[in-house]
Amino acid sequence: MKVSVSVLKEYNRLINAIKKTNESSADFLHVDVMDGAFVDNKKFPLEVVYDVKRISKKPLDIHLMVKSYDLIKEYAKLMPEYLTFHVEVIDDYTMIDYVKNLGIKVGLAINPETSIKKLIPYVDDIDLVLFMSVTPGLGGQEFKKEVVDKIKEFKKVAPSDLIISIDGGVNDKTIELCKYAGCDMVVSGSFITNSENYDESIEKLR
Image 1: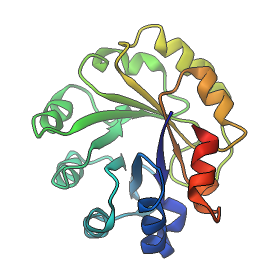
Image 2: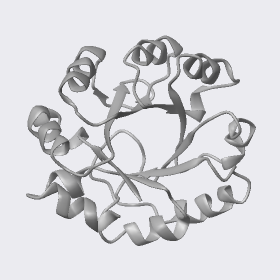
Image 3: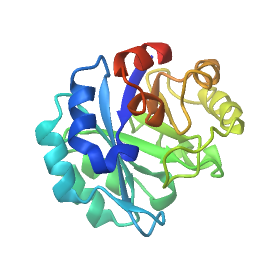
């Protein structure tokens, strides 16, 4: 299981959280960008994420909770390992093609209430699907168990090399549900960043 550490809850202590992630066995550093429009919250403006990239020794896994195509293009300039935006904001392949042509791996995120039918047209053209197991916008929420069945259903039609990731309420108790669903990667924030020993918490998720 790949583990991506979300530093959303550590926004006011970012440098400390990034350094701890650097020293850990985490696979990625997960950055939740919010525009105040797609979600109510507003976090991680571009200049902050530039600083994050400068400090981080882990590949960046950027999750864009934004409505604007222009914003997606701006964050693409950071050249992260994965750039994930929401299937709810796209109507065609335009933005997927734009990001892929830059050499960046493309992820599509999907909210708990959105039908997997919205993902189906794009599955052969993306690298990752990020299933939200909480309502996006706030850290520290409880895991929505109904997302497990949604993932299992999606895996029946997804290409075998498509990475299935999950974000929201992932901890040492819900990880078994993530594994049962068939996830390849988990995004975990509070469970890791609230602990004294990041590695210890990460290993509980693997």
